[in-house]
Image 1: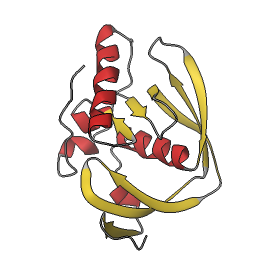
Image 2 (image 1 turned 120 degrees about the horizontal axis):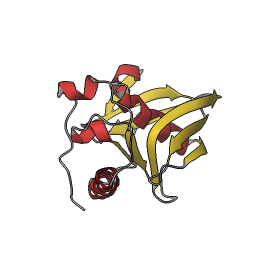
Image 3 (image 1 turned 45 degrees about the vertical axis):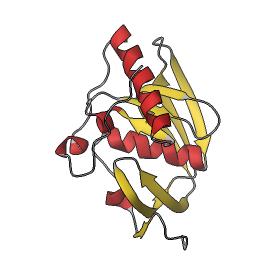
Image 4 (image 1 turned 180 degrees about the vertical axis):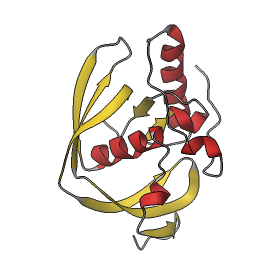
Length: 155
């Protein structure tokens, strides 16, 4: 495993649409492993492949309940609404107040190519939506209603 460089919001690559993974190979397994190590090293709760300059539809998330790996994730249901603070490893030092669905259902492939469905609410729903947005070239700053410095506790 290796820690990869996380690109910043000024990099135009973050605005590109990622390509679906056509075949799960040892390179995809290595990518998932490297992404998890990179996310944990940066103390994040999610990381999308475009954030490490790879335009593939691959995401890792851990909101404190264990690592979730998603290949070609797709939101198939949304319900409810939540508004809350959001940050991003590619936009260091900034938080924004973002409106998201309270609950989502996501269909994806696991590292073995098996399709699965994950349902999330609260923080997990927010992380799923945030990381899948990255795959479509969308940053939380595009959706934020307000911005704050990370040090501002008045969220």
